[in-house]
Image (cartoon, rainbow, N blue to C red; front, side, top):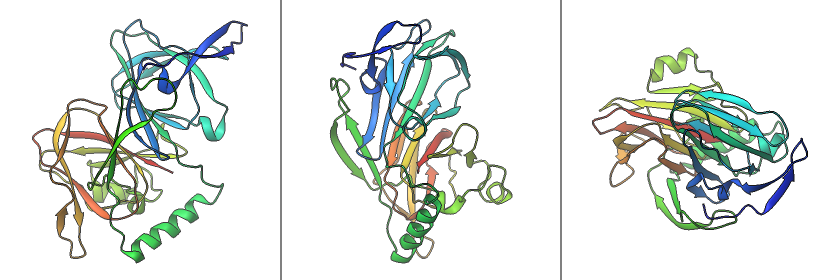
Amino acid sequence: MGGEAQNRVVRGDGEEVEYYEVWDEPLHERRLEVVGVVRCYEARIGPGQSTAWHRHEEDCLYVSLAACEAWNEPVDREGVLHVAAEGDVFCRHTRTEAAPYIHRVACKGGSDCRFFGIECLLPPPPPNEEDQDNDEREHEAESDGEVPAGIAEVKVEKDAGAGPPQVDREVSITRSFASVAGTFGAASSDDPFITARFGDCVKRVDEGCTGRFECYRIRLAPGGATPPLYWFRPGVLVSLGAFEGLSSEQVGVLGLGVPLSEGPVGAEDAGVCWAHKGGGGVARLRNEGGRLVRALLVLLR
């Protein structure tokens, strides 16, 4: 992405190697950033290709955008083969649980490895205070009648050079793909309440989604809509395939749907993303297009 590998580290076998910061590694393409909240990028590695050595410093959730076989080689230990299915998620809690993580990844299969990374830039919550804090803020949002904060879609220059990504421009859009935390709580994916109320259109992902991340698969047939969802936490909605016509509508005090945007959004491929800042509000997602909407909603703690 235009940066240079100016840092060095000694491997376990004594070899000294250069490494990039993740945002400068050539195969990691920046997708979106909301300063102080979230940063997103996609790594696309062709068959037989490998990333350069690079370092992660933030807690990160990864989404596999395609089925693939990847060889993950940390700088300080033996590598391991990672076999991922399309839509698999996994986390690495580098900031809150471990030291900065330096590795490289090689594509071992016959098709591209595509991993979408979502870095949580929020300050880590104090131990054992997160649930209490969330409850208090949710109560305040309900009592104050706050409106959804909307999407903050941030575009960055593709070849911005070395150093942390810089925001090119920020476009505030009053569509809010927002937190379902107030509705779902900590229920598991097989909770009968979730199954009865949401069916197949919204499902919680437990496997691979841990710590500071909470994940829900969105699956909407043409004409379908989610029930009203309470949107509180900040997060990211990531497309898992091409679609068009996804809209959101605010649910008013009389239960009337009010469009939150001038028009629906679409995605030409997996890996298109939208961020939201949270803040409360109730709205539903609706598929106004002609294709199935498949997406992953990732909430940040």
